[in-house]
Amino acid sequence: MTNIASTHRVTSQDVADRAGVSRTTVSLVLNNVAGAHISEATRQRVRQAASDLNYVPDAAATALASRQSQIVGLILIRTPRQIASDAFLTQTLNGLIESIHQQGLRLLIDIVELEHQKETYLQLVRAKRIDGILLSGPRFDDEALNLLHKSAFPTVLLGQIPGSWFSFVDVDNIAAAKAAVAHLIKLGHTRIACITNAPLSYTAAQGRLYGYQQALENGGLSFDPDLVRYGNFDIESGYCQMRSLIEAGIRFSAAFVASDTLAYGAKAALRDHGLRVPQDIALVGFDDLSFSRYTDPPLTTIHLPAVDLAKQATDMLFQYMRGVEPELKQVILDTQLVVRDSCGAKLSGYALTN
Image (cartoon, rainbow, N blue to C red):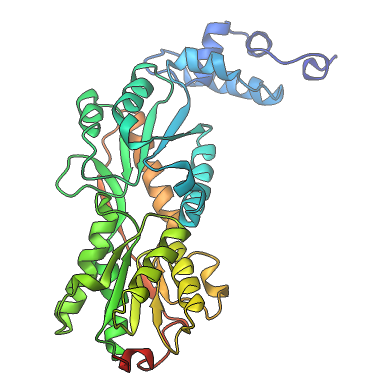
């Protein structure tokens, strides 16, 4: 008997012939179409036939049969340059791609400039190019999100907007930042600079700055706005903001940089100004990128569970896409302070100069 699979591309008609059913039945079974009255015995026969023939459904036909695109959209509210230098995003992407592929779906990544948010959301939803949205880096000023809410389109945030109605998976940025700064205070530092990971319109940046302020208050220290600079996702902004602190002649002995990516830039600025880590300036980052343990010295930082964050966000979105209301709609994952050598064990000499 000739093996069909070896002579031509296997079609749904081949599966139908082998199972003794119609092509329509094959489509209904293999696409799990809701409401199809097909016995379990017939379903098993169709699946077995498809397996025997190594049948791979055509993506366009699958989308047509299920009225779904089989695509999840990841929306990034940043510039291409910012995304290219954000190493934490790469770790998150690995987790997203793995989870999405396990479901037999594909990932569409859309980079949205701030001025085009409204148009992009509407186009994606109306054109039905995607079945659900994962939105990374939510902002307080994103009015276009209201459109997604009104459309009831399956959407999950990677991050959160406090007080909003959207489901999300996030970490407690405030508590994590407090732990990082409290570690520096425990080492005896009283003049601690802060460089945010992004502008304060991004909710994570505001949370980390607030955690920094709370740690100072809990440690009996005054908040000095002159010690704060505002980063913009990339390594260059870390360099520029640290240089700004140094060249302003502001006295500080330690710095909390709310992103490992920016911390690498900040460390380079310290080096270029003849300052050593940790001998002159203690340094703490945020994210625990894979590179951070290999820097010289290894970077003390906050570990974020990037893969788990991606997995839980996609699992939640898959439930919405199936029309199921998730049991948990707001998930906060644990973080951990990872102590390495970039803080040293005592006050730096630079802290004692005026």
